[in-house]
Length: 80
Image 1 (tube, rainbow, N blue to C red):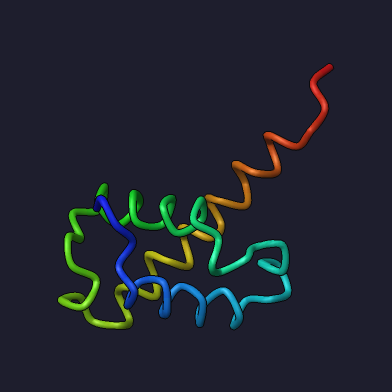
Image 2 (tube, rainbow, N blue to C red):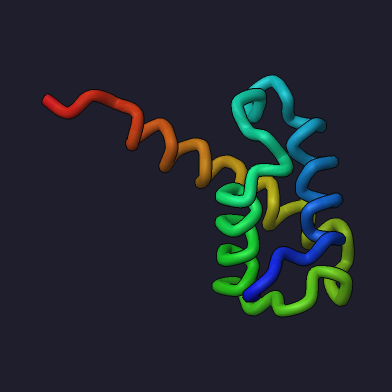
């Protein structure tokens, strides 16, 4: 996806807000986060988020949030 799909941004934001307890450090409007989620959906062969049932999109975005947070956490840890 060359541009971020507005529908994907809206749904991702909604899901981030649902998981504020552990996703509180994610800005749902952050281009880096949305690009990450878009790329993850592409790797799952989801080309058009609107063509996927919400429940499936929800599952992929939720897993993407967890993966994104793990990557950020590992990048923020000081190297020994």
